[in-house]
Length: 315
Image 1: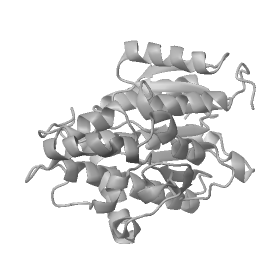
Image 2: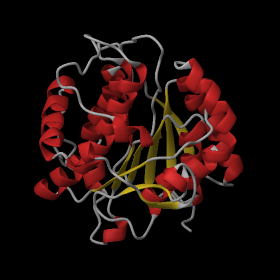
Image 3: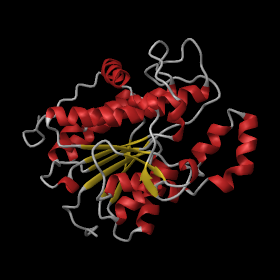
Image 4: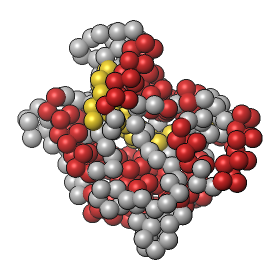
């Protein structure tokens, strides 16, 4: 384990780390010796989360940074602060998300909120932090900077509807959620290909938590009353705690056996709970044409440039 008090400790960022899976992921990274940034939109919850990380790992270096993925301006401001205060970034965990709001909601930039918060905000964030990630490049494969995207079991029944990405024609809360989580898995795959093509030296992977008992899931099932009632009956049998749900993410971020483009989830029945292992991808997640088009459309929607400028040169 690395010395958590060392000023040279590598940096990790976890979005949506004020509670649930993100907080458990932050704890795990702090225990592994990383300096951790808890990125979220609520400073008070951020302060409590940092306290929880320090209680979990004595001497942990952890701080809160304001990041609201509902706003691309907030994403840009966050990235600017990080590029000014840090020289490299070893781990970026794109964890934050919302699940199945019953009514159509939009981000400050006008995107359907699940597609905007769960996916587009992270797409832009990763592009803006690319110089810091590239600056952490190592000749050792196990030490390559890693980006972990949080997908979901729900991606299996998702599809990317290029004709209605913003749900302007029809809004279904779970259809939009499935689309956003499929997009995250496609993003992980595309980012690895882009890194290989341009020599960025990244290890881009994805993970899903199975069925984890978090406030996010509780909020999501409220959009389907009957399904929600049924889930309450069976959840104790097929679900796991937030700490257990974070294990695939932590394995993706820290495991020695992680390969470029990997995808991890629980090893139990239907990948709902259990220890981390390589997870199943839907056929939609293997569609190269959709993956390529989604990358292009996402660049257009967010203005992401994907330029790995030199941090050392101050560019």
